[in-house]
Length: 134
Image (tube, rainbow, N blue to C red; front, side):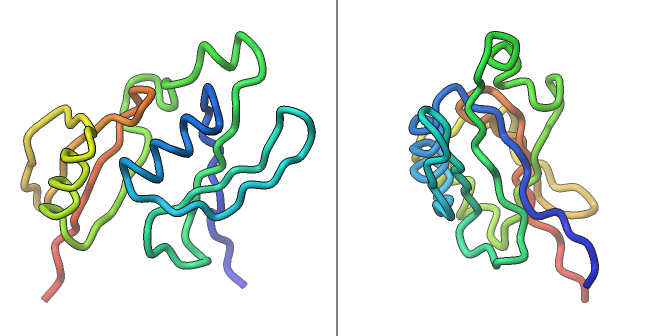
């Protein structure tokens, strides 16, 4: 079986705060929420319609001051995450209606439509609809 990226750790201040934002603002699905020990949970979210082979986010609560200082700095200010869509206009409008902040107007690049938005902690995300071949 070929290798694949399964889950990416995403640093959060609070499990419930992040879970609420991803599910309500982006429409992500809760995949798993399992208590591990007092104060620690295994919380996984994925984009709507994601297959079992798609990458997901593990919401990892910061457990000390050093980790807490890094929340919102997933890529040091650069875009950290890339969310593909099959309908850019639909998803941008839905995200904006739910309060998601876009940093820029939609750009139409050679590969498709794209715009950068921010998550609840200020991390940059590209929303991308790739051009269809043919």
